[in-house]
Image (tube, rainbow, N blue to C red; front, side, top):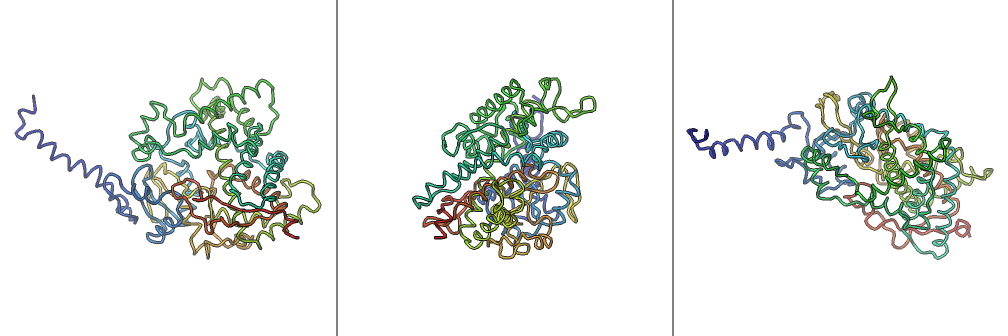
Length: 517
């Protein structure tokens, strides 16, 4: 063998090379942020700041606030699926979200985008032209005209919510408010987005309900953990074996449901429906297999949505529309239970606006400005997600900082929303922060629960309408109060993606007439 003629044994050569390789792949990357002039927590070789991420969790106010206080408005962290800079500087945020959006169109780097159908076709997973095409197709579903037509089914769901709340008013017991708000929002999303009706408020064992909760409460499997730690290594494995980030059972359930809905509508000729499902179906053609994807051009026109596009985004909007709105609604009621004087102001506003109206509709809730302030302040305190992210598609300059191509930029929402410079007494519930005068004094990127710019949350208007309508109906009928088992303040589970209290949100209710007596 050739190695037999080497003057030095091969083992010694390999031993000499190993430290060089270790430096190149494990040590040198640690200098990345130092060379960029970016501070941050000290990383470890190979794993970077992965232990910091694991220790601190995801939805953690104290950690985000402390890091910003310690390192400033820009700091860097290494390791796993997120190696990048975290930014709270307002000018930089304006560049990332708006001015230089063309360089930050995507939410993730290519290493984190897994081509596994149908989930890989979700709007949140798509990049570049494919994202633009699908976004432009589904955006009309959230126009003001469409929202007005959703008032009737929303009110029907609110009727059930009020009916289910009555038993707690009668017995005077405290209860978990998220169970009721979650059932309400699930009924709303199935009716307004997919034109199908379930009764999750009376039947918590409905397959829709069970499958949705499995999707949201999924544990981090060893495979997903490996992907988060070593995305470049695991991505081709996931794509080769079509390993899904969501549990296979619920994913298949929703795929079958939406597939059946599509077949039923095609057979019945229900093209005049105005819901989200029909809008996507109108953009779908059966011959999609002849082409690669919705980002392609066909005779000068954008490609229609494929069946995978329809199903994937049906799953996305069902899950997102259910959980985030239900959670926010529960926190608004919690805040109003703790602040009875604010609740009185909201109720007086509702009664005044509804004095000459029979139905809470789009125009009515649009006039409920103080109710909206309470919702916006709650979203400041309990934003549905704790971090927003963008990936640079090219080298780009943000003030003094040069972001290299392929680097992530994270926006720590909790650090921004609890910044005492932006929000004096940030832990206090003060709806008056959102008067017209106060909003004009503040920066455009001081409140970002839905993100900002062209890639903000597409369902924001629907969520706010649903929240205002449901809360207006509820607060007109019931006074919300704390109970003996209400946690004040709430203790949050820091390892959850959404803001989840350790002991839930326990509240009590009584009829408004009874409260007045």
